[in-house]
Image (tube, rainbow, N blue to C red; front, side):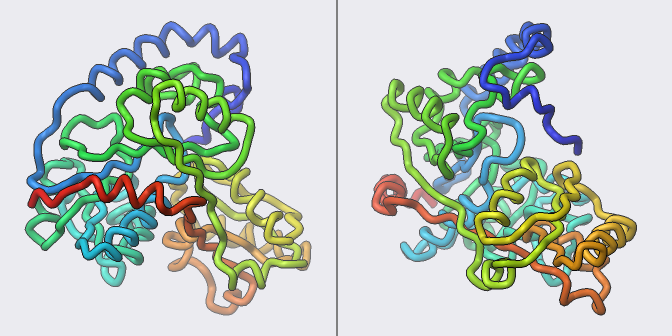
Length: 334
């Protein structure tokens, strides 16, 4: 997948964005019409963890955190994902010991290491499989704009640094539909990290009387210990590679080189060789994300394992009571 164009993230639309704006208006109208359709009732509660824009905003760590909270409440959560980048259409439960990223997609493989996960291009069929396997509640990772399933709680994840970008719809900007209208379809907004863009989206949420929950992504302590004071090559294939670089710097690492690929990048042995060559040239480590490691693991030479730092992140809510109140509104329907 290609990286999002930089002009999307400007505070004010560029000339190119304005030229594309008529297409964006049409795209946004079509998407909003789909969002407002009534989906199929899966027979159990469905929580959707989505976002307003195309690209990464932190949905997957948010879905993991919510599944963990539901488990603590005595539920049996299953995460439902489309399986982007995998060859299996599903519905199928992801088995991290049997499946590979090429089968089910990188994010589902990561997710299945944390909670039971089903992939399905047909969301209704996926929900039925999860229910048959014992799910008491479903957490949809992505799908805020997908009308196939009836959603009982719709959470929109927003990255504080990027917000809604230039405020325009695809292809003129990153929004999938106009922000104010999408906000009306959400039940709450989860703001991850600080940033000026965050406040602009928060103002729209407050005007719509939607709860705004603050959260942060925290890298694992063991990874931080290895990164502190070290030179690193940042290797990633995610939607916003600059976020990963910022995480490394915040952990005390010096980023001496960046090898950023498009989101869901299918790694080759040559990518691994290039990263290791850069690391050796700079006397540095290679740092990568947990998502990227699902695809890099089969390619990484065992002899070079000591040069690698995988950096898992987890989401923490600033005020856990806020998300707990929202989860408490969901009754068992199945």
